[in-house]
Amino acid sequence: MLPQLHLEALALSVNKVWALSPTFRAEKSDTARHLSEFYMLEAELAFVDDVKDVMDVVEDMLRAVATELQTSSVGQELLEARAREQEHEGASISHVALAQRWQGLVDGPWPRITYDLAIQHLKDAVAQGKVKFEFAPGHDEGLQTEHERFLAESVGRGGPIFVTDYPRNIKPFYMAPSTDASTEGQAAPTVACFDLLVPEICELVGGSMREDRSPQLLRSMSEHGLQATNDTPEAPGGSLQWYVDLRRYGSVPHGGFGLGFDRLLCYLSGVSNIRDVVSFPRWYKRCDC
Picture (cartoon, rainbow, N blue to C red):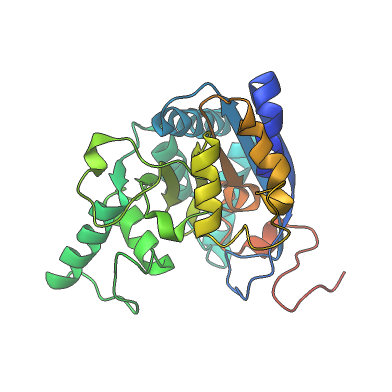
């Protein structure tokens, strides 16, 4: 079960909640950015009406972290370590580039672009010969790692960038539909969501508004094939009946996000492989301890 769903229940009681907990994913991803077990910082906020408010929380939080890091002893030690590595053996990132990375988090506001505009930007870059991708950008295929990296470098100018309003069919069932006028006329129904992309790491944070209306939630669950198991007239939500019941007698607008904590450590420390910031990393087909 997703911790996020349980956090939604708590948020409806006490307004703002968060959890830092281990997450497990059985994915065949064997890259420097992926683990099978990692820590996720998740937060849920009740009484927010717009996904922009959730993005503001994420931006303010990470800016505060970067600002503190710039003036802390830990930050100075990281820069000195990168300088020594560069001098003796070559570092994955120089101390100058690392300091610029932190400043990129401090500077703002961060660019925000819809998914449709992001896809068009990628297609235009290919047509103009600015870049070649292994996977051609397409609306229904989603953003590949190479696409996210290019967006962070080009639109984000080497810093963070929010990509918003992804197509409904490639996002989870619990996301609310987009309400922003800028999404009207897009190729497919979209949801009020975002991914925060940063250079090298790519996706760092994902968030959305949550569907708070019971009929619409049930319809979305059906579209995602989540009502087939244990579905009865008495319990139309099946094993997620408790989640549906949160809306049964009325709910409130709410949203939240999940941040890959280990990826954040990689980005802030300038470490190129996520396995090097985890004490006992576990990844695809590797669970040594």
